[in-house]
Image (cartoon, rainbow, N blue to C red; front, side, top):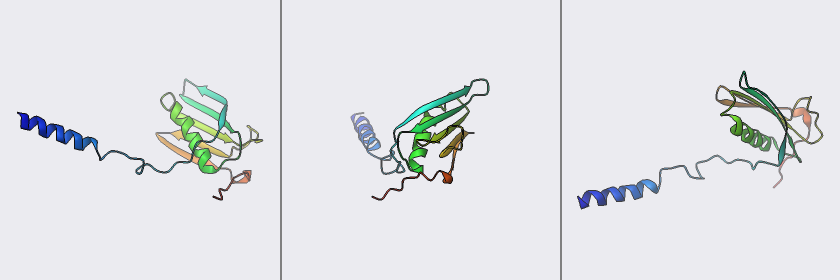
Length: 124
């Protein structure tokens, strides 16, 4: 009996020491830049929402994606379809966004407005 308990404890220790997700397993993510939710238009009947977010300063496409995915993660339990329009400072909310992100059928797609011309390219 003591032998079985000892073996069980040893196995539990080894099971807790590895095999799980680590920071090395996770893909590198851009930090989420400072932004604010400018507007949110939910349609509870169809479980859809459109969210406009505006950044406080220049951002890269990958930073805009990180922010949009943050917004989507916060709302995905309540809505089946989530559209996030990522706007740069000075962009008109009625025009094309810098990045358009859409969550639908469990997947997220992103499309870019290359004409915005306000992409910051990291140099270091």
